[in-house]
Image 1 (cartoon, protein in one colour):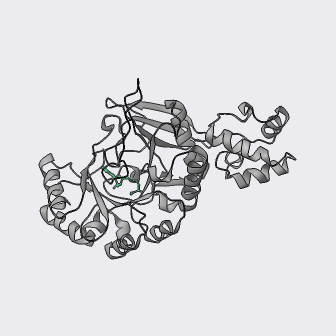
Image 2 (cartoon, protein in one colour):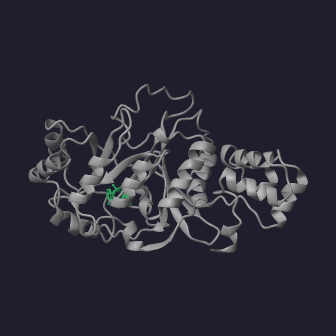
Image 3 (cartoon, protein in one colour):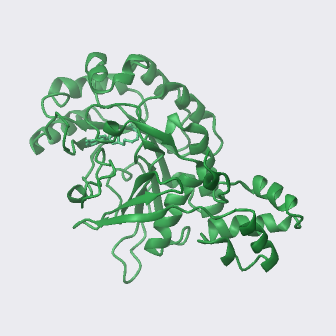
Length: 370
Ligand code: SAH
C-alpha cells in the first residue's frame, strides 16, 4: 500500500476512527464528529472540520492523515445530461464514475420505485443514479466489454469506493437523504472480486452518507460463492446478475468465467438468494446481434429463470473499438422482450446513457477523449 492510502481517513469505520482518536489522546466523542464530517458533511480537507479543535486538526495533518477524496481529473457531459468523471486517486490510478440525472431506466419497475416524487423546482431530475467502480480495470474478460481490455490493475479501497460517490455528490451539489440518489455498483471492475471493500463501502454509505441500501444495486458477472455471501449480509444492496447468454456453450464464449461457475451453479445461487419483502432479483442481458438475441435464446432464458422472483433488464450492446459484436436492430430487442413478457417475466429495455461520451455500460475504459 502507498503511504497516501494508508493515511486516508475516508474508508475508516466509526470503530477505526475511535481507535485513531484514542491514539491521539482525544475524547471518544471526537470519533463521531470525524465520522459525521467525513461521510455526512463530505469535507474535502481535515483542516475544514470545524467541529474539531484546531490542535487536533493540526495533529492529524502532521501525522500525515488526509481525507483522501479522489480528484476529478476530467469531466465529460453528454447531450442527454449524463456526466462521466475520470477520478484520480493518490497513487495516480484512476477509474470512471457516471452520474445519470434520470437513472437509466433499469432501476424502475420492480415496485421499489413506487411513489416517485416530483422533481424539485429548478431541477430536471427526481431520481439520479450514480454508477460506481469497484476496481481499477477488470479481470473478468467479458468479450463485449471495453473495461476488460484494461485487465485488472488493483482493487479499490472502501474509502476509494465511497470517495467516488462523495466527490460526485459534492460536484453536483446534492445531499442524500433529502435528495434521492440511487447507486449502482456497475462501473469498472467486478465488485465480488473486491468483496470485503465493497461491503465495507456499502455500510459507510448507508450509515454515514445516508443512502439507504434499498436504493443500491450491485451487479456481478457471476462470482457464485460471493452471491451466497451477499445473501447472508445484514446490510446489502439489491442483486443483479449479468446473465448475457441462455446456454453454457454461448455463455462460456462470451464470458469465460462461465467455465468456473456455469449456468447450473449460477442459477442455483440465484434461486437460493434470500429475497426480502417485495424485492426482486435482476438479470441483465446484453443483446449482441445474431449471437444471443434469437427467439430460441429468449425461450431458453425463460426456461432458465422460470420460478425465480426476478425481472430482466435488456441492454442492446454499446459498441466500442476492439469489440467484435454488433448492436441488434430495435425490432430484435423488442422481439426478445415480447417473448419474455409473454412468459410472465417483467422485462425492461435499458436506455443507453451517455453513449456519445463513452459513459454507457461496457464503455468505461478511462478514455481521455470526450
Ligand atoms: N462486473 C459487473 C459490473 C460491471 S458491468 C458485472 O459484470 O455485472 C455492468 C453491466 O454492463 C453488466 O450487466 C454487463 O453485462 C454490461 N455490459 C458490459 N459491456 C457492455 C456493452 N458493451 N454494452 C452493454 N452492456 C454491457
